[in-house]
Length: 261
Image 1: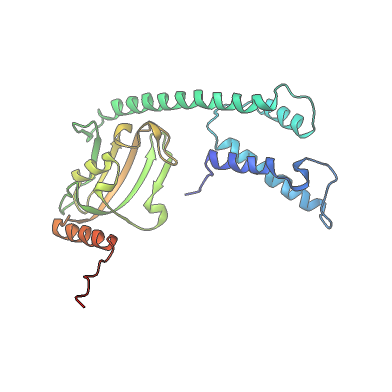
Image 2 (image 1 turned 60 degrees about the horizontal axis):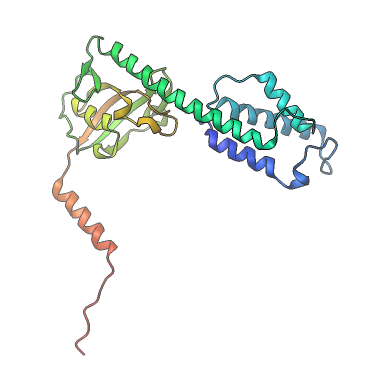
């Protein structure tokens, strides 16, 4: 999957560029290093344009007036009089981002509820007591895992708008993990599948990453997972107890018995 810099990462880098003391940190036409060609200037200028374009595209602002953006950019770059003070810049952006965050998580919650309401009426979709929805795509012939087992799977995770945010298929290898170490929707949902089968999970946000979200998953997102259950590795209580004991012993200092001499 093509990676996009997180908004916080690009802002941090933009601030680093803005605060750089090299050459005074000031735009200055004609200020070049020796042997720097116009082609060098053009290339780095284009790279900066791409960089800030990527930053804006990956940001949570939503609609942006590019005409006003260019105006503010040029006025700051050319040292002209601006409509806002430098102190006001941060206050306005932070206030807008807080309001935007509230809006987006509330909208995501409602969109997810609307999706699940319509989805539950589709053929083959089952709704569990927790609110999880699932559909058996291919019935397996092997065992069904318990919530404590480890599984080997191939899977694709996407948002309800179709955006793929995680995929073992794209990585080209299966994934193995204990069902105790994943989101609640996975822990429950995979127990409805059988080894060799395929299932589709429709996971409400409260059984996924909740209001905080995670990485490329926005807060309050309802998630869809297509999962092929390749292998079930049953939980072994005695083996796990032995592993736990070994870890505990490894973490304790070794105290030698005092010599009798």
